[in-house]
Image 1 (cartoon, rainbow, N blue to C red):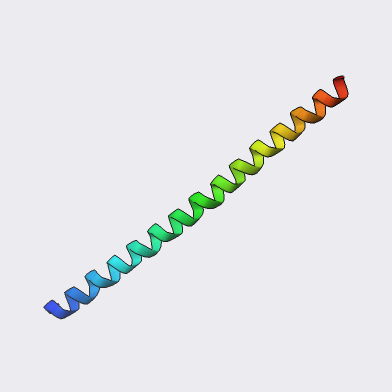
Image 2: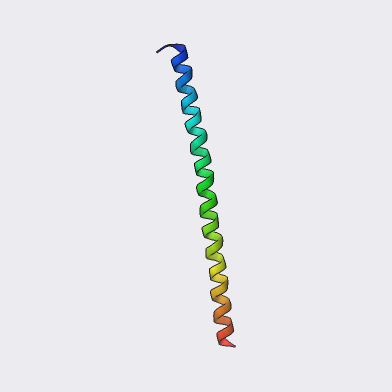
Length: 54
């Protein structure tokens, strides 16, 4: 393997790492939005139970 091939391979690996990091950040945002939605549902459900018990 020549030095230029090695540099090209390292560049490819770095690009892959950046893509994986971006994908991971995206997944974390998706999970966070699901968590937020779940919390909203729990609050709505608690409000519903409270209003029926009055």
